[in-house]
Length: 76
Image (cartoon, rainbow, N blue to C red; front, side, top):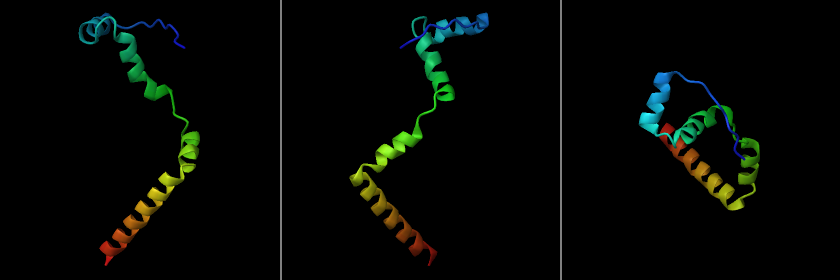
């Protein structure tokens, strides 16, 4: 669901947004800039979902084992 928000900006910023971003694209532009600063992903549920994928877990384990073996070889 979308919500309407009224913000106040300097006239120079306003004109620059209209000129560079375009009058019908400002909301999307602001949302894309602001989102990473105010919306945090739920990493815990994402990691739990990934852990349930046995094929992915097996591939990750194999990759880690190969990587550790390569590192051990480099130390010699």
